Length: 280
Image 1 (cartoon, rainbow, N blue to C red):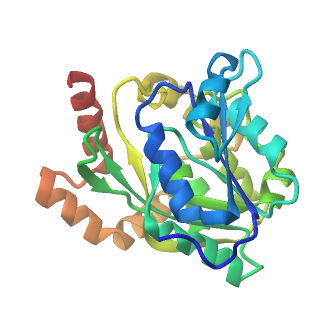
Image 2 (cartoon, rainbow, N blue to C red):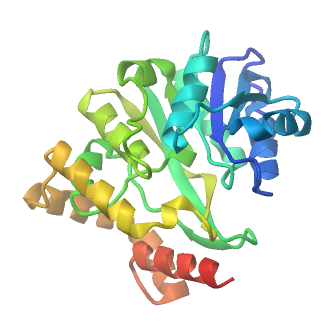
Image 3 (cartoon, rainbow, N blue to C red):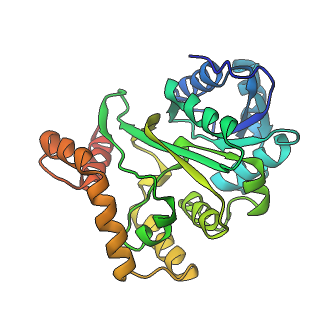
Protein backbone atom coordinates (compact mmCIF):
# COMPACT_ATOMS: atom_id res chain seq x y z
CA UNK A 1 0.00 0.00 0.00
CA UNK A 2 1.79 3.08 -1.23
CA UNK A 3 1.22 6.43 0.42
CA UNK A 4 -0.74 8.29 -2.26
CA UNK A 5 -1.92 11.26 -0.23
CA UNK A 6 0.89 13.31 -1.73
CA UNK A 7 3.55 12.74 -4.37
CA UNK A 8 5.69 15.60 -3.14
CA UNK A 9 8.80 14.67 -1.18
CA UNK A 10 8.22 15.96 2.33
CA UNK A 11 9.64 13.29 4.66
CA UNK A 12 13.07 12.02 5.68
CA UNK A 13 13.51 8.58 7.24
CA UNK A 14 16.97 7.58 8.43
CA UNK A 15 18.32 4.07 8.90
CA UNK A 16 21.65 3.70 10.72
CA UNK A 17 23.37 0.53 9.53
CA UNK A 18 26.66 -1.33 9.32
CA UNK A 19 25.43 -2.61 5.97
CA UNK A 20 25.69 -6.31 6.77
CA UNK A 21 22.22 -7.30 7.98
CA UNK A 22 20.13 -9.22 5.42
CA UNK A 23 17.05 -7.64 7.01
CA UNK A 24 18.10 -4.23 5.64
CA UNK A 25 16.56 -5.20 2.31
CA UNK A 26 13.10 -5.51 3.82
CA UNK A 27 13.53 -2.27 5.77
CA UNK A 28 14.32 -0.42 2.54
CA UNK A 29 11.56 -2.16 0.59
CA UNK A 30 8.82 -1.38 3.10
CA UNK A 31 9.80 2.28 3.47
CA UNK A 32 9.79 2.61 -0.32
CA UNK A 33 6.53 0.75 -0.82
CA UNK A 34 4.62 2.44 1.98
CA UNK A 35 6.22 5.88 1.99
CA UNK A 36 6.08 6.27 -1.76
CA UNK A 37 7.41 9.37 -3.47
CA UNK A 38 6.98 11.52 -0.39
CA UNK A 39 9.82 9.80 1.52
CA UNK A 40 13.56 10.22 1.16
CA UNK A 41 15.18 7.20 2.78
CA UNK A 42 18.69 7.92 4.05
CA UNK A 43 21.11 5.14 5.00
CA UNK A 44 23.95 6.19 7.29
CA UNK A 45 26.83 3.72 7.37
CA UNK A 46 30.60 3.40 7.80
CA UNK A 47 32.59 4.87 4.92
CA UNK A 48 33.86 1.41 3.97
CA UNK A 49 30.42 0.28 2.75
CA UNK A 50 28.99 3.54 1.38
CA UNK A 51 29.60 2.76 -2.30
CA UNK A 52 28.38 -0.81 -1.94
CA UNK A 53 25.11 0.26 -0.32
CA UNK A 54 24.55 3.01 -2.85
CA UNK A 55 24.82 0.44 -5.63
CA UNK A 56 22.47 -1.97 -3.84
CA UNK A 57 19.91 0.70 -3.01
CA UNK A 58 20.14 3.36 -5.74
CA UNK A 59 16.89 5.04 -4.68
CA UNK A 60 18.23 5.71 -1.18
CA UNK A 61 20.61 8.45 -0.20
CA UNK A 62 23.67 6.86 1.42
CA UNK A 63 25.84 8.92 3.77
CA UNK A 64 29.13 8.05 5.45
CA UNK A 65 28.77 8.40 9.19
CA UNK A 66 31.25 10.54 11.14
CA UNK A 67 34.05 8.60 12.80
CA UNK A 68 33.48 7.21 16.29
CA UNK A 69 29.77 7.90 16.29
CA UNK A 70 27.07 5.66 17.72
CA UNK A 71 23.57 4.84 16.52
CA UNK A 72 22.09 8.15 17.64
CA UNK A 73 25.00 10.11 16.23
CA UNK A 74 24.30 8.45 12.88
CA UNK A 75 20.58 9.26 13.15
CA UNK A 76 21.28 12.90 14.01
CA UNK A 77 23.79 13.18 11.20
CA UNK A 78 21.41 11.71 8.64
CA UNK A 79 18.45 13.83 9.66
CA UNK A 80 20.42 17.08 9.84
CA UNK A 81 21.99 16.54 6.43
CA UNK A 82 18.81 15.53 4.62
CA UNK A 83 15.89 17.29 6.33
CA UNK A 84 16.10 20.64 4.54
CA UNK A 85 12.67 21.46 3.11
CA UNK A 86 11.00 18.39 4.67
CA UNK A 87 8.23 18.65 7.23
CA UNK A 88 8.21 15.09 8.63
CA UNK A 89 11.04 13.02 10.12
CA UNK A 90 11.63 9.58 11.58
CA UNK A 91 14.09 6.73 11.78
CA UNK A 92 13.98 2.97 11.67
CA UNK A 93 16.68 0.42 12.39
CA UNK A 94 17.96 -2.00 9.76
CA UNK A 95 16.25 -5.02 11.32
CA UNK A 96 12.81 -3.42 11.67
CA UNK A 97 10.19 -2.57 9.06
CA UNK A 98 6.98 -0.69 8.41
CA UNK A 99 3.54 -2.26 8.08
CA UNK A 100 1.04 -0.90 5.51
CA UNK A 101 -0.88 0.77 8.34
CA UNK A 102 2.06 3.14 8.90
CA UNK A 103 0.35 5.42 6.37
CA UNK A 104 -2.10 6.31 9.14
CA UNK A 105 0.67 8.22 10.92
CA UNK A 106 1.12 10.35 7.81
CA UNK A 107 -2.63 10.90 7.66
CA UNK A 108 -2.82 12.03 11.27
CA UNK A 109 -0.18 14.69 10.68
CA UNK A 110 -1.54 15.68 7.27
CA UNK A 111 -5.06 16.22 8.57
CA UNK A 112 -4.28 18.03 11.80
CA UNK A 113 -1.56 20.66 11.88
CA UNK A 114 -1.91 20.89 15.65
CA UNK A 115 -0.44 17.38 16.00
CA UNK A 116 3.36 17.42 16.23
CA UNK A 117 4.05 13.71 16.62
CA UNK A 118 2.05 10.60 15.75
CA UNK A 119 2.73 7.17 17.21
CA UNK A 120 1.27 3.68 17.16
CA UNK A 121 1.89 0.16 18.35
CA UNK A 122 4.46 -2.33 17.08
CA UNK A 123 4.49 -6.08 16.65
CA UNK A 124 7.51 -7.94 17.98
CA UNK A 125 8.81 -10.61 15.61
CA UNK A 126 11.71 -13.07 15.65
CA UNK A 127 14.39 -13.58 13.01
CA UNK A 128 12.04 -15.81 11.02
CA UNK A 129 9.39 -13.07 11.08
CA UNK A 130 7.21 -15.07 13.44
CA UNK A 131 4.93 -12.94 15.60
CA UNK A 132 5.97 -12.92 19.26
CA UNK A 133 3.52 -10.38 20.69
CA UNK A 134 1.94 -6.97 20.16
CA UNK A 135 3.15 -4.00 22.15
CA UNK A 136 1.04 -2.31 24.78
CA UNK A 137 0.43 1.44 24.54
CA UNK A 138 -2.20 4.12 25.08
CA UNK A 139 -3.24 7.57 23.95
CA UNK A 140 -2.29 9.15 27.28
CA UNK A 141 1.09 10.34 26.02
CA UNK A 142 1.48 12.76 28.91
CA UNK A 143 2.00 9.72 31.13
CA UNK A 144 5.15 8.74 29.20
CA UNK A 145 7.42 10.28 31.82
CA UNK A 146 5.70 8.84 34.90
CA UNK A 147 5.47 5.38 33.29
CA UNK A 148 9.24 5.35 32.94
CA UNK A 149 9.24 5.44 36.74
CA UNK A 150 7.77 1.94 36.50
CA UNK A 151 10.04 0.93 33.59
CA UNK A 152 7.20 1.03 31.07
CA UNK A 153 7.92 2.59 27.67
CA UNK A 154 4.75 3.92 26.05
CA UNK A 155 6.00 3.78 22.44
CA UNK A 156 9.14 3.08 20.41
CA UNK A 157 10.75 4.76 17.42
CA UNK A 158 9.66 2.21 14.79
CA UNK A 159 6.10 3.48 15.06
CA UNK A 160 6.71 7.23 15.30
CA UNK A 161 6.52 10.07 12.78
CA UNK A 162 7.18 13.65 13.87
CA UNK A 163 7.28 17.11 12.44
CA UNK A 164 10.75 18.44 11.74
CA UNK A 165 10.19 21.30 14.20
CA UNK A 166 10.20 18.79 17.08
CA UNK A 167 13.65 17.51 16.15
CA UNK A 168 14.94 21.05 15.63
CA UNK A 169 13.53 22.41 18.87
CA UNK A 170 15.00 19.57 20.92
CA UNK A 171 18.34 19.65 19.07
CA UNK A 172 18.13 16.00 18.12
CA UNK A 173 18.87 12.88 20.13
CA UNK A 174 21.29 12.96 23.05
CA UNK A 175 24.32 11.09 21.70
CA UNK A 176 25.72 10.42 25.17
CA UNK A 177 23.20 7.56 25.39
CA UNK A 178 24.00 4.38 23.48
CA UNK A 179 20.65 2.59 23.87
CA UNK A 180 17.84 4.79 25.13
CA UNK A 181 18.31 8.24 23.55
CA UNK A 182 14.98 7.83 21.75
CA UNK A 183 13.19 7.30 25.10
CA UNK A 184 14.93 10.37 26.51
CA UNK A 185 13.96 12.35 23.39
CA UNK A 186 10.26 11.47 23.74
CA UNK A 187 10.37 12.58 27.37
CA UNK A 188 11.78 15.95 26.34
CA UNK A 189 9.09 16.21 23.67
CA UNK A 190 6.38 15.65 26.29
CA UNK A 191 8.03 18.13 28.67
CA UNK A 192 8.13 20.70 25.85
CA UNK A 193 4.34 20.40 25.44
CA UNK A 194 4.39 19.15 21.86
CA UNK A 195 1.02 17.63 20.98
CA UNK A 196 0.93 13.94 20.13
CA UNK A 197 -1.69 11.65 18.62
CA UNK A 198 -2.08 7.88 19.06
CA UNK A 199 -2.93 5.41 16.31
CA UNK A 200 -4.39 2.50 18.26
CA UNK A 201 -3.12 -0.32 16.05
CA UNK A 202 0.18 -1.83 14.96
CA UNK A 203 2.02 0.00 12.19
CA UNK A 204 5.62 -1.30 12.39
CA UNK A 205 7.58 -4.43 13.26
CA UNK A 206 10.30 -4.61 15.88
CA UNK A 207 12.59 -7.59 15.30
CA UNK A 208 14.27 -9.37 18.20
CA UNK A 209 17.42 -11.18 17.14
CA UNK A 210 20.90 -12.01 18.34
CA UNK A 211 23.67 -9.43 18.15
CA UNK A 212 21.44 -6.44 18.84
CA UNK A 213 22.90 -3.60 20.91
CA UNK A 214 19.52 -3.31 22.62
CA UNK A 215 20.12 -6.76 24.07
CA UNK A 216 22.59 -5.30 26.55
CA UNK A 217 20.15 -5.21 29.46
CA UNK A 218 22.73 -4.03 31.97
CA UNK A 219 23.59 -0.94 29.92
CA UNK A 220 19.92 -0.32 29.17
CA UNK A 221 19.09 -0.39 32.89
CA UNK A 222 21.97 1.93 33.70
CA UNK A 223 20.98 4.44 31.06
CA UNK A 224 17.31 4.29 32.04
CA UNK A 225 18.28 5.11 35.61
CA UNK A 226 20.27 8.05 34.30
CA UNK A 227 17.15 9.29 32.51
CA UNK A 228 15.18 9.00 35.74
CA UNK A 229 17.81 10.96 37.62
CA UNK A 230 18.21 13.69 34.99
CA UNK A 231 14.46 14.18 34.52
CA UNK A 232 13.58 13.74 38.20
CA UNK A 233 11.35 10.73 37.59
CA UNK A 234 10.30 8.94 40.76
CA UNK A 235 8.56 5.64 41.35
CA UNK A 236 5.89 7.42 43.37
CA UNK A 237 2.09 7.50 43.53
CA UNK A 238 1.93 9.29 40.17
CA UNK A 239 3.84 6.45 38.55
CA UNK A 240 1.52 3.95 40.23
CA UNK A 241 -1.64 5.74 39.05
CA UNK A 242 -0.25 5.99 35.51
CA UNK A 243 0.63 2.30 35.57
CA UNK A 244 -2.83 1.24 36.77
CA UNK A 245 -4.51 3.29 34.05
CA UNK A 246 -2.12 1.85 31.50
CA UNK A 247 -2.79 -1.70 32.64
CA UNK A 248 -6.55 -1.23 32.45
CA UNK A 249 -6.25 0.27 28.97
CA UNK A 250 -4.28 -2.77 27.78
CA UNK A 251 -6.25 -5.59 29.40
CA UNK A 252 -7.02 -7.31 26.03
CA UNK A 253 -3.32 -7.38 25.15
CA UNK A 254 -2.43 -8.88 28.54
CA UNK A 255 -4.99 -11.66 28.14
CA UNK A 256 -3.53 -12.48 24.72
CA UNK A 257 -0.11 -12.74 26.38
CA UNK A 258 -1.49 -15.03 29.04
CA UNK A 259 -3.22 -17.26 26.50
CA UNK A 260 -0.02 -17.68 24.48
CA UNK A 261 2.77 -17.55 27.09
CA UNK A 262 1.19 -18.01 30.52
CA UNK A 263 2.23 -14.56 31.74
CA UNK A 264 0.74 -11.09 31.78
CA UNK A 265 4.14 -9.39 31.58
CA UNK A 266 5.32 -8.34 28.13
CA UNK A 267 8.79 -7.76 29.59
CA UNK A 268 8.98 -11.47 30.48
CA UNK A 269 8.03 -12.49 26.96
CA UNK A 270 10.57 -10.02 25.58
CA UNK A 271 13.28 -11.59 27.74
CA UNK A 272 12.32 -15.10 26.62
CA UNK A 273 12.47 -14.00 22.98
CA UNK A 274 15.94 -12.53 23.46
CA UNK A 275 17.16 -15.74 25.12
CA UNK A 276 15.78 -17.78 22.24
CA UNK A 277 17.49 -15.50 19.74
CA UNK A 278 20.83 -16.01 21.48
CA UNK A 279 20.35 -19.79 21.41
CA UNK A 280 19.37 -19.87 17.72
